[in-house]
Each structure stands twice: as structure tokens, then as C-alpha cells.
Image 1 (cartoon, rainbow, N blue to C red):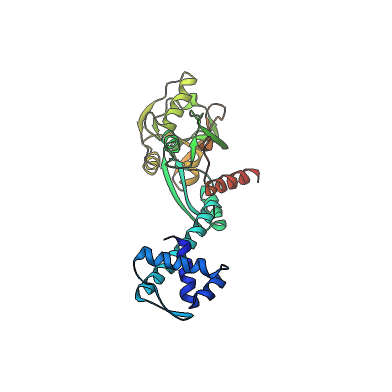
Image 2 (image 1 turned 90 degrees about the vertical axis):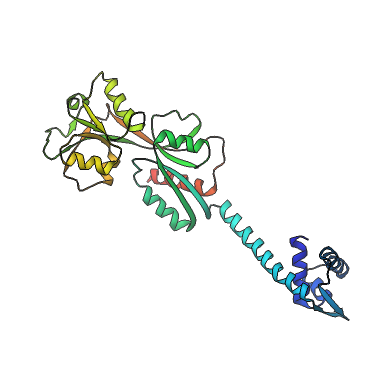
Length: 293
């Protein structure tokens, strides 16, 4: 028995006779009578008791009618939901976010929510390298990552290039508004990441490129604790601008590091040669529009 036969049966019950049901369904009476007979044979029971032109629905028929209504309703809801997901109106959107987050992400998500209120979100936070792996194995569709990384497998939307800042407590003051890596190499640095991961590598590579040996006293990937340590003058650090934008109010000084010595591009990536969901495409389009403004 298929959904088409269930619709036939609903019409038969609601119209009360075969001829009226056939007219409602825009079909001739004999094929509809045959469909009813086929259903009764398949189920092994009478669904209606015939009495002249009219009939009475049996108890078995009443049960089938109840379920037929539910199943056809579910089918219609499924069609609507599938179309909405296909158009990006609803459905899940899976996004990976670099550990230090992304400027304006919350604003873009709010804009998506206004336009597509039925879209749901799964946002994972991790280091850029791990986010690339999650996109490759399709755990997530999109990811905000910090470059440079090996991104040959991905399509990339470059968002902006983020500067880095040298951060100290209020007790340490540097006259210059912009500093060089050479000038801060002897300061006690706490790196805002752990060895082998994104920002740790970027900082180490920047010093190495200039053949400088920094005075590293520790690592701390917990940004709140890191800023507490800096505020207490336990040490200094180098952080991307996003950290300062998202963690205001600490008694610290921030000095921009020369951009030609140290900066990091931020990009939105997705897997090449793989179709994105409509919700993901809408998200990418919003970011593209945001860049043009």
C-alpha cells in the first residue's frame, strides 16, 4: 500500500461513496473501486460495508483512515521541510571557529537569523589546523581559520588581515605606539597557545624569520587566565587583535606590532568540489556582501 492509495481511501471515506470520491480525485469510478479492493485484499479485511450507492466504514477502515490522515500529513510536512532545507530557509548550519573567534561573527549570525529564522546552528571552536580536518571529513561545512595553512583542498574567502599586539600590565610602559619584535625579545613572554598549534607557531615563526630568540617563560591557552597574569605583571604576551576586542576592561597596555613583521590573514573555508547546503551558501553570500559594504 502506498501514499497514493491512502489518499484514495481518505477521499472515499470523506465523500461517502465511490462515485463522489472518484469525481473529487478526477478519475473514473472503476479504477478507484479496484484500488479499494486491492487494499482490502492486501490487509485481509473489509474496509467498508457497501449498501447501494453508499457504504459504512468498518472498524478496520476507521483505523486505516486515522493512520492515513497522519501519514499523508507527515508526507506533506516532509515535502515542505525538504524544500525549505533545499532553499536554505531551514535546516542545520555547521560552522567551525578559530580559538580566538572572528570579528563580526555574531552580527552575521543575527542577520542570518532574521532572514532565515528556522535555520539551526552547530558551532565548534578549535585551532585552525583541526578545523581544516573537520571540514575535510565533512563534520562541519564551513570554518573560520587563521592562515597560513595548507589549504589546497579548500575554497577560501579572505576576510581580513589581523594585526598582533604586544600586551603588558600597566606597570610596564613603552613610549612607542608601535613596537618591533626586536624591541620586545627580552620581555618575559607567555604565549597564548601551546606548541605546535596555530598562534604559537605564528609567533615562533615571526621571531625565527628575523633570527631573534624570544624570552618565553610559559604558555597559556586560557585567554581569561592569560590576561589575568598579564594584569598582575606576571609576564607579557603577544595576542591577535580579536582578543583585545573581545576582552576589554583589563588593566593592560597594548602596543601594535609592526604589520610588515607580524600579521595573520583570516579566511572562511569550505571543501572544494563539494556542494554546500543552501544555508551554508546563504551564509557565505552574507559575508561577501559584508565585505563590499
